[in-house]
Image (cartoon, rainbow, N blue to C red):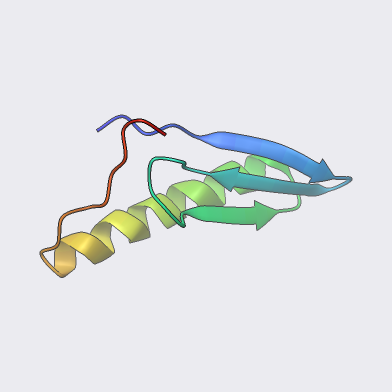
Length: 63
């Protein structure tokens, strides 16, 4: 599974990081580095949550 990561600056000291392939997986942080680290943690939690429930991960490769 290849995940696309997008980090955008939305204002001075505000960044949004998201993974368009996984609906609803995004974070907001005060720096690009923090946004990246927080998104990695969010991705791990997202995937782990689905695996614990034995559900298919809603991956959209075209996003």
